[in-house]
Length: 396
Image 1 (tube, rainbow, N blue to C red):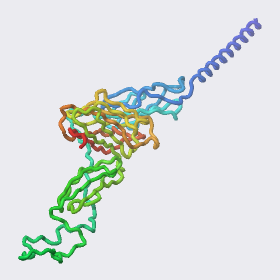
Image 2 (cartoon, rainbow, N blue to C red):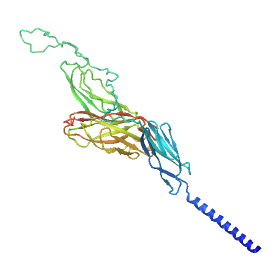
Image 3 (cartoon, one colour):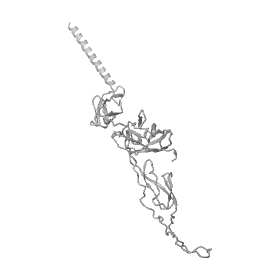
Image 4 (cartoon, helix red, strand yellow):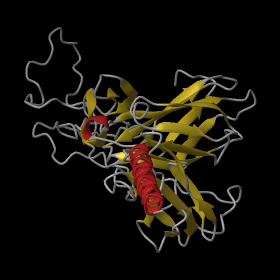
């Protein structure tokens, strides 16, 4: 009987040892299956909301595939938007905020979503006529006058009476002595007419006119040179006494700005291209702009991402290209090597056959927080209009 009991105890001990061994092996197998998270992908990279709205942000996938998807959610600014432990984001006030997901299995691994919160009540775009910043005009007067300026008035006024009385016998020789000593300075004839030519930095003739002696020439509109600001004309032209060639002078433009170019087109013209430039790019990672133009004079047919942005930022256009529609650029990251100036957008317009001749502004506007840098911090840019001049003589 004792042998039988002892034998049973022996089998129970062996069975218990086997169970513990199998449980430990299973536990180790499970531990091996749960891999450390190395990368997180969220369901959205950018989200636009209005104050009071909510949406749920999710972990779309992780790398490696069998790694844990558990994350801790954080808001970069709870006054703009909050996020719950389950990823529900609620918009509080207008602005831009970064929502961060931190892996619970590897705290060094993070993913971000840029949330742009707009005011709760949106102003009607059809009723709104946004004011687009105009480029400041620079006075065209140079600071100094040339020293060798000709005399304004002739040195001697012509007499209404002859200086000598006619002789009975006509003289075959002219008067030997002049009535006036010659002057070192050029004399100005009251009936003189001179040519004044205004030219750009690349020798393009901006305007040419004839001016009567002693009168002022009329300068053309200050020319536009991308990357530079017009400073002044290099010569004075308010008292013209000789033929003049007047050159435009510039200084480097260091202001971060979006500058719309100019175009000239005839009524009925198709695919009129208007370039839009980024100047002194501060490192834009995300941006939303709304366009403003006269839709009675032109139709927006297309818009293409420019060379300055296309390698870094993805352009999303509105489904319907029309006045006050939005353009949005988004990127994942930006470095100094990726920050470029130049054409950021190419607009293509069609001009109706019945379009009235004239000069029409093309510009953009944006709300606070619609432009952010690589740290997702809001930045401001100066906006400068461009023009489309519609004329039957497109050479002007």
